[in-house]
Image (cartoon, rainbow, N blue to C red; front, top):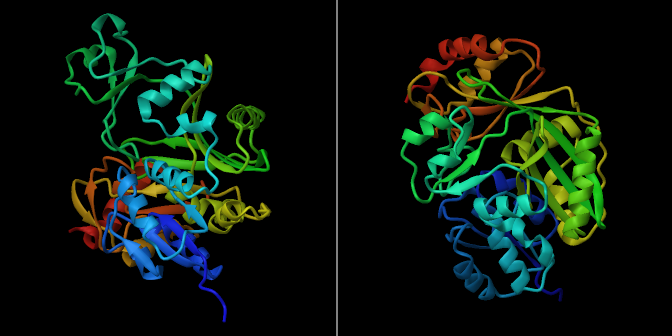
Length: 387
């Protein structure tokens, strides 16, 4: 009689974790998962599940994991942000692969991570927790005001120094000097202590349009990006890991904005990695966790770009995926819509962050863009998306 199958534990069971959960089940694992949402769609793929937040509840999550009938054979977090700290604590407690001691600062909160980046010469910008002293501000310079907790740029304000002097800043908010220059996102796969694969995406912000953010592959990655990834992997002593880097190339040099030991976001695993690079991110991540060789064969189309599509008009909107697909077929022939929120979900307009996107969009960069597409989207989608 065969023994019971091994357990694979997922930190998170939302829609964006579904590819990883399915990959684990296909591999023959019994899947266990935690998620703050008791109705998380990933629980349908699980033999064991619990409504426990993936962020900020690692002690409770660890107690639940220890009560499972068998010790998990792997712990995955097919995501980014605070859930990675929960994954790290559980992996260490179970004696599974985890970040080396000199890389633990990657899991620190924003201010502490910035201090670590500055100490390593990877960042130069200054920051303050709470209201900065007036004498430290340059009235002509721009500053970022970040909420104490948040994600997907939600709640971030950009203010000139003169305006910041008059603006209310909470004690828990983080104020940073804004770094001017082209923005990039790097996804780094580390295998056997070296960079096995690197994706470089140019990030273009388009405020006031239907496309607030665009990611465009840079293929092959530029030499500076390759050097930055290799140096960081070496300095951190990483052997088997993922890194997501947000970078600005300013006149003063390369400024590392943020480092996450995880996936570069739902847009990446859900569409960009497969369409632009021909890589199954969930399968590659499972290979990494199991210590198996990953094959990165770039057979995608790096000429595509990824856009978040928003309804630029005011008011609450309803995600209507079928209507959006029909409208896009007319507005942007050949485009492929990617579900960003569940069908029927409500989003805010005008959008405040990527959380208010109607969907993701993979397409050729040619065609209507910016304000022109915004006007067409508003006209075509208004009846279907009005809540």
